[in-house]
Image (cartoon, rainbow, N blue to C red):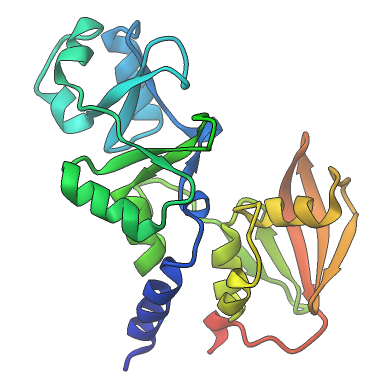
Length: 241
């Protein structure tokens, strides 16, 4: 079996164990249309952050009225009330759903995106069919989309984007089995570090964990931007196999 095929098989097996919050786009990163947006504003949003589908909201992201696809917008030349006319109903799923349950909802409703809510009905994020496909086959970058980088340095350490999904980080270092050992309250490498430290770190702070040393290389305000990772125990890194 080819290495790429083996990786896909492993991802399929792990997909059912992953929390869907690790696959979704966080609510703070969702690009949405307002019913008050004019044609120029909508066009600028699509050009600036291209996606296949966008939520349509009334006042804010917590007031979702539906979803609209770019394909639907291309053939029309109206906005405001027009969005109400062409948008699909919004699909909501609880955060404890599995990715396979979400896929079933997509098949049943023929709506290929949904919004993840917690037990109180508060919005956590958004999942599209493309997000689930990426969880199976790996990242499918959009045009001009920047990849999360893992740069190996001459001294053997790694310079890594803090926003890389934690699952992808573990996959890169052949540690995917660790993802299922406990319920995760984080989705990214930065979130993992915050979870472990239980505080907002400063540049230069370090965390030791299971043969890894994580050093905060750069902060963007209160957000962990770059992390320097040093391995103190032998780890079989996937890309070097």
